[in-house]
Length: 158
Image (cartoon, rainbow, N blue to C red; front, side, top):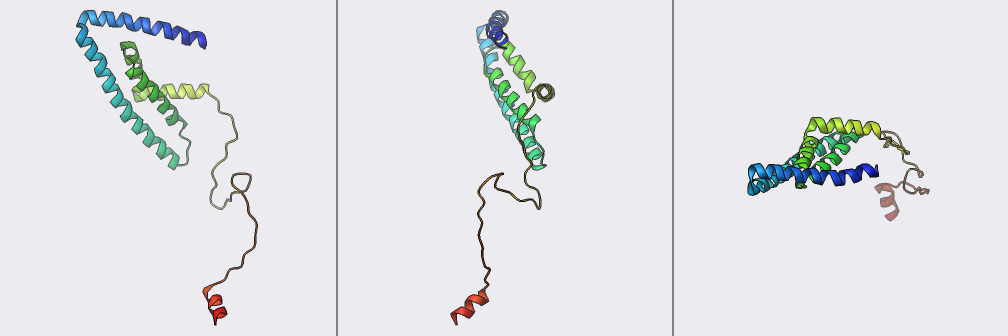
């Protein structure tokens, strides 16, 4: 994994520099800088709107009692897309826009979920009629009590 990341840290800036030279030679300096700034602002607003939509979907799945694993991973991918879009460059903008689109993002999230296995001791929340025990959480206190109503208090006062 480390050699791949090292390759990306070397290759991506070289490709970006080449693209800047090509686009700058075609459009000129200021239009190229303007294009980079526009993609950053548009990308940031799109990440925000897509993030809110993903958050709403996640909340709906939680209310339905489902684990929103797909939406959580899509939220992480949206954060990655935001970083890519805010990074100056045309290649990173292209990659960020692809991740930003709902179809490719969902496909990428499903592929990543297939590669990841989750291990652990997960328990369902308490359903109707089920009670929490001390090994789940909290403390158990034992004791006795007597229930007295208002008539008992009134009789003892007279």
